Every structure is written in C-alpha cells, then in structure tokens.
Image (cartoon, rainbow, N blue to C red; front, top):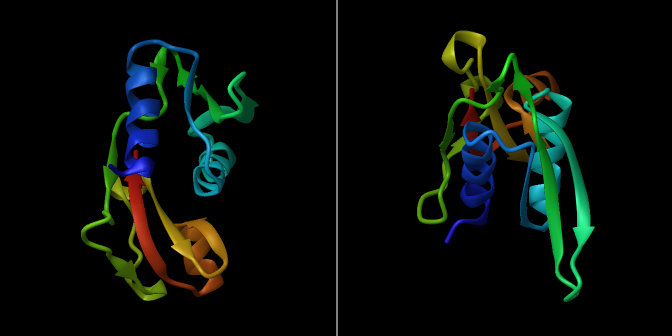
Length: 129
C-alpha cells in the first residue's frame, strides 16, 4: 500500500532479526531516503541492484551498535490518506534529540535540522529513532 512505510519497516525488522542487509523494490524517492539515512548514520550502506528479470532492487546495509540495530523504531507521519506539512518554524526535535524527522521539501529530501537551517518546510515523511 505505502512503499515508503514498507521500506522503513523492512529495515527495522531486518535489524531486529539480525540481518546484515535487506532488499526492497527500487524507486528514486526510496534511494533519496536511503541517502539521508546513510548520511546520518542510521544505515551502513545502500546500493541499486539489478535482478535477472530486469527489476531494480535497493540493497540496504543495516547499521548495528554493539549488536543492537541503530534503528529501534520508525513512525510514519504523512500517509497516502493524510498528508501532514510542517513549516520551518514547526520542526522540533524528536525524542529529545535522540531521533530525527525526515521531510520532503522543495530542496529535496532533508532531515529536520537541515530543513530548519535551509529555512524550508515540507511534507513530514517519518520520524526515526
């Protein structure tokens, strides 16, 4: 139903199951989300892989810290049925600064801190901690 939620839950469940990598269907927005998660240290790696039938997959390496996955939980904010938008002034810390919010802005997919420093708002995709 919701491809972004499916990707995030796949990463979270793969980490809790002890997997090193997970695969999810490829799309440009998922690749941008993976880039943001990689830049902030929530995942170890990401790469576009081609399957034999011509379909593209996104392979995501799961980051662990002392045996526990870096991603403990994810909360989808905007859903296909209800879109939620934040202005630059409405962006607040997640879990007292131990998490982050990811937004889709006119300047691309950004974390809450990046969006605040760029003075742009956008659609709140998800919170992660």
